[in-house]
Length: 65
Image: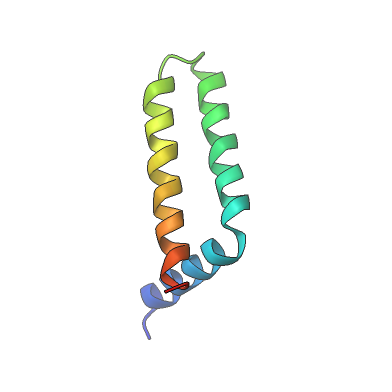
């Protein structure tokens, strides 16, 4: 198993075990960016948050199948 395989496995385990906390972190990061940019890019930040959450959900769901 290569280093990238190990990293992916670790990310899948993290998403599976702590997906709710990862989602909270994504929300906090988006709020920080919105605050610093005074909401100028809020629509793009929201899109990025949604994409990141979907990716994390996909990682977590792989271990549930």
